Image (cartoon, rainbow over all chains, first blue to last red; front, side, top):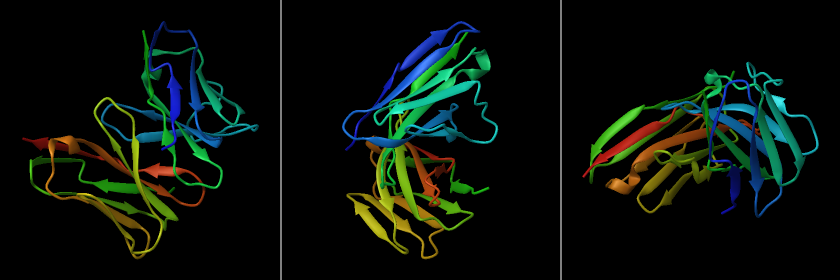
Length: 115
Length: 110
């Protein structure tokens, strides 16, 4: 199956710093990428949909200035958590989808801990 | 907004017993997908169901899509310890977004 690489897999940072997470589709072109957040023992909550070359579409309640998303190429999307605070600590997962297909392939996720 | 309800939240079974998880959408879906997430891992795609009434099998796993395309089920026959994890259904409403159910956490006692 298709491979999606997410980096870093784990990050600890101080409160107030910014953290960038990368999501890459390795063997296909991802016209659309999705960013999810997952709290322990809970389901995946969609944060935003990222289309290559255009602005991301954020879900209700997600601050676009807090979670900056860039999808500059067909194989790379980035999520930057700006001025991170302890409440931003979570498991962030990206997924990628090929044009015309419905299946989403997930990255391994990034565990963010903000001290 | 669209919701996908999944039950049960937890299921503890003895190895060899069967297991079923159910999903119900508030709206008609264009397709439904199932994912498995192992503890500490990320969701892994299992299958996609598209047609009304569709039934698909993968070894001991049987997936069904309801006639109205609003509900789905995953049944595992004779569970094994390797089946442990959380199973998520995710509905696609043609808007391109997946709406995930709450997941069913399966534990298997050897």
